[in-house]
Figure 1 (cartoon, protein in one colour):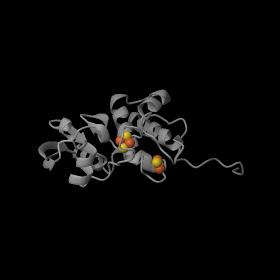
Figure 2: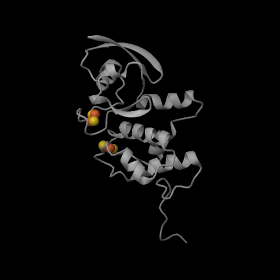
Figure 3: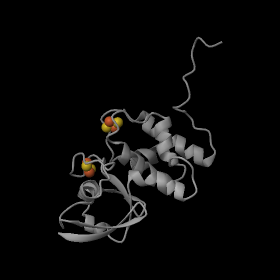
Figure 4: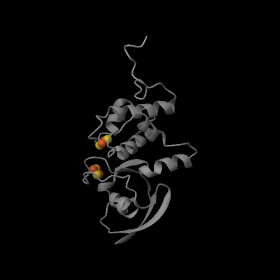
Length: 178
Ligand code: FES
Ligand code: FES
């Protein structure tokens, strides 16, 4: 057992956990932050993605002790951190996933959103290739990815004041419309 000092979503926490526990285990089973999903638990699916100092990390293969003295962001932190920075409502990336319907069962969504946020913080207007590379470690069993990439495009365009090429949230035009 060891005592860890972690900074999670802007809060300093002290928590006891076995020294071999991963960050994913500490988040879920010590801190109750179950938005971080435990999927494959071996670094394959991306469901457990969190941000450490703004970069996406697979928390299921990252020892919790290695996160000491770093800033850890989980899905639960996005909205409060956005509001603490003066924003309103949800973090824009979360909002865009919601508006584009970029989920079905939702199991992959925390990891997808956090990977997308890290991308957009680094590359404000990414190409589709950038987006595909950034999310290449996040697997989704349900959506087919189309809305996920549309959500990233929408979030980027909203921030930059640009028109998205294919807005997923707009109604399809009907052949029967005059
Ligand atoms: S649960 Fe971590 S990569 Fe699958
Ligand atoms: S929405 Fe079900 S795994 Fe992605």
